[in-house]
Picture (cartoon, rainbow, N blue to C red):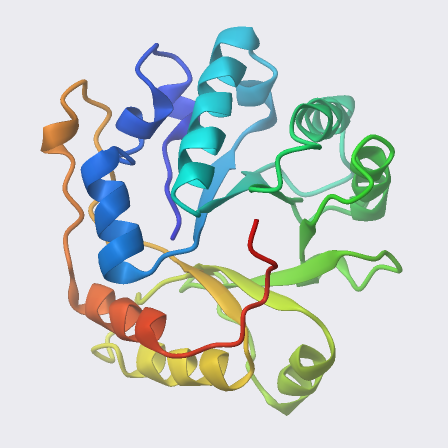
Length: 245
């Protein structure tokens, strides 16, 4: 599942799990009832480079999610183009901080210098598992999972050539949303395709965006039409793609 709001939450001092609607009640809902295994959190480079207080709160979030068997996919969200020094600094900082934390995964943005970013994090965290947008090209690097987005703004061509590529390379749909007039038919079809090809995915927009409030009891995940499709897809048997930590 995708959880947005880290950039906004960074400005306060509320624990991130509360600010992002990942309190005990919601974690129990997501893990025990839904069977979620990965939480993807996008963020801007400047958010992580803002200072130690946020990093301490992020440490707590990683540890709390790991305690209930969840991976945290830290997704760097940056403009297209060559990576600047700030992006390299973020990768160095996170790679060093979480090189012994197997629950922390890393997603690079689609940039022209994606291989340079991989070299940066691998220089300090050699075993890091890096998720890389397929739009950045296929790179000669190990331990890379290729990603794509299945949204109205970035709808992939899930044709025979894609299926052939997915059969030979690890793939992950980092954003999967149901934003069309077909009442979920395309989402149902894609869910079946993901299952057949053993492709992992993170659902987007199936819950009301978490509100940044102090009272965690106000956070509620709403089961929408797409949420029902997501829940059925989560219940489908799939081959484990990650080694449990």
